[in-house]
Image (cartoon, rainbow, N blue to C red; front, side, top):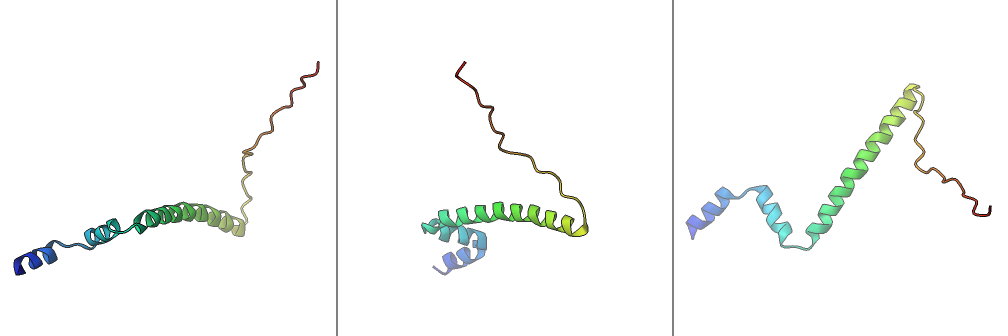
Length: 78
């Protein structure tokens, strides 16, 4: 028994323990989604802060692309 405990302590790592605990709960899926959302939001915030710093330095803003282009209206009455 003592050998098993020593072996467990010797081979235990924090990452393995964390993954084991998360695999035993249903919260792990939610945690992964939150982490992914944080990564996406941090990338967007980083881009926005770069624009703010450039504006504070006096650089002119780059024109943004138009994502919505209205379709030409087709006249069916001829």
